[in-house]
Each structure stands twice: as C-alpha cells, then as structure tokens.
Image 1: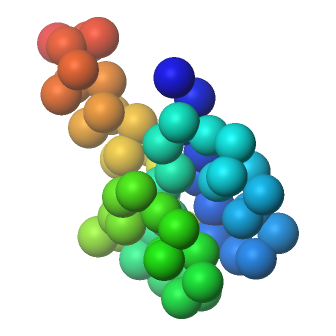
Image 2 (image 1 turned 90 degrees about the vertical axis):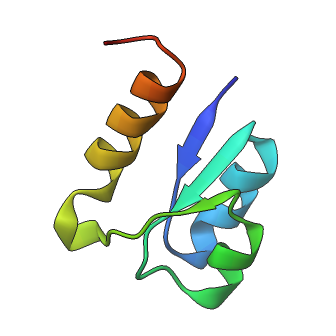
Length: 63
C-alpha cells in the first residue's frame, strides 16, 4: 500500500493513486475532502513524521 502526503491542489492526482492519503491540519479544503486521514498537526509541526510514526506503530511495523 502506498501513502501520499499532501496539502495543496497539485497533490490531488497523487491522492487518487495512493492507497492512503493524509493531509495536514492546514491543508486546503479540497485536499482535506479527498484525504483518508486529516492530521491534527500542520506542516509546521512535522505532520509527516508524526503520522508515519503513528502508522508504523499501529500496524506493528515498528515497536
């Protein structure tokens, strides 16, 4: 499964191809609509690192 992270309109085509789309809290509304997960964190808060850690831990890929 692929994961895409995006916050702007140019990311929508990537979201359509990904198995899971994750948007930050400060993404534009159109991107949030397409996201499977909307992070509670913004780009300025390292949302990608936070969400990757959460996904890997939840799926028991890392402890």
